Length: 75
Image 1: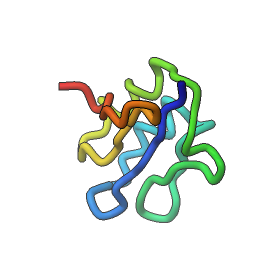
Image 2: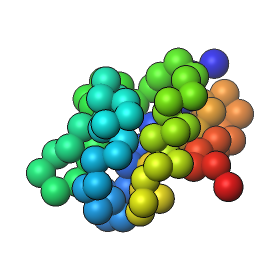
Image 3: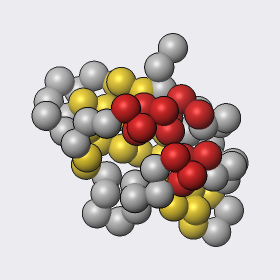
Image 4: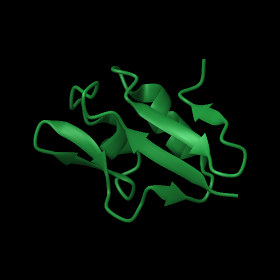
């Protein structure tokens, strides 16, 4: 199973919370965050859900690539 990471660049406010929690997956690119090139598909890890949950703009989506279920941010 893998998870797919996305950052909505229009919603992102560039807080940097995601990059602080998972610097191998997220980076600040000018005024917004982005998924590190080549890092959009990842092995499941709690820190990825934590990054989505910590985003004040709710701009990060974590999706299970097998089922298509959106896992994060959590309600």
